[in-house]
Length: 418
Image (tube, rainbow, N blue to C red; front, side, top):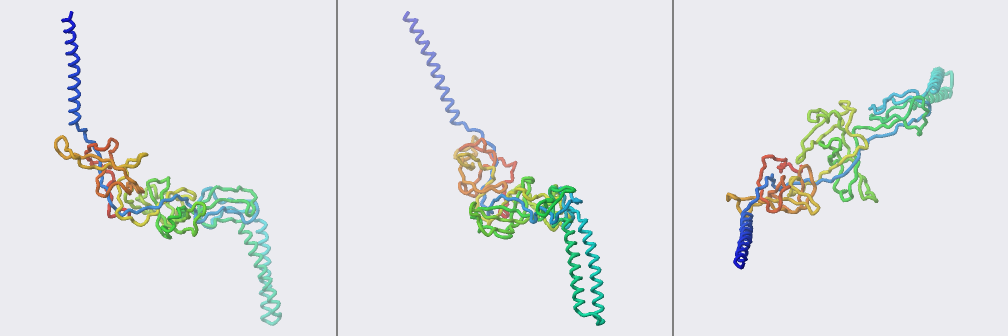
């Protein structure tokens, strides 16, 4: 019995000892494996942080305003007998819009014209008699006064008739017609149609008061509209309000710009009506339009419409030695923005070659323009950073640089900010 118990005890001791020994050897082998394990390098693209002359910008939001815009009203009362336009039509200056019944005025005009002819004959007769000494000078003066009165009556009736032939006061686009045939209209109470000049246009916007000293007349601006997100357009500041709004502490600014032909923007690079140029550090195309060319080519279909929304940029004096990086290099989070620096590891790779690793650095970002962002604090010019491929990275992750697929991440330092 004792012998059997001894054998069983030794057997259990051998089994449990083997299990313990196996686990100890297993843990040792795992630790040795991970001690020598090096994770595979992550493929990333790199860029060099550069110091450039950066043009800071003032940003604003504005609306297009017609240089001339009115609701056309009647100066005379009467029934509308003719309508000469369609809603939305483009009209030239003095083009007829509506005609109000002027039959009575036309009859009065003929009556007064006959009176004028009679007074002219009487004046001529009295002048001839005076030259022959057959009548005093007072008779000539009286005849002349009667002639002038008759001329004034004719001009008065003609003016009344002209008021019933309503014309466009300037060239522009009409809105929706507000009158109908046979409708009775009266001065100041009936709007015929809205008329807005289309070229050139104003662009009104507001800026915080701290920018008041940084803007000036004839300063260039650039702006974008939602309809054409790939284009930027040009204008110039034409007026700055002389006071600051007491409620908002903003200053009103007005820019003037040439409207752009609709057809030209369908193929801007091949259009003869506009000029284009490439914008540094941006995938947008700068469009320059010209009001003189529009008038010369009788353009009447335009892109910008009064009331349309626009985003505005005003470039300021260059700031030298500003550090910029591709915007794709920045990781944004609630805890702060960061960039991965690429550094040489203290340990070599498997084959003994130098190994690159990343180090996460938190940065303070500035304004963004095109594909680049200003770095105010965190990295220095000349440091190599990860530009794309940072989703799998953390501190110490080995990386392999692959710049075979390049983004637009190498700015022209000589032209940047211009």
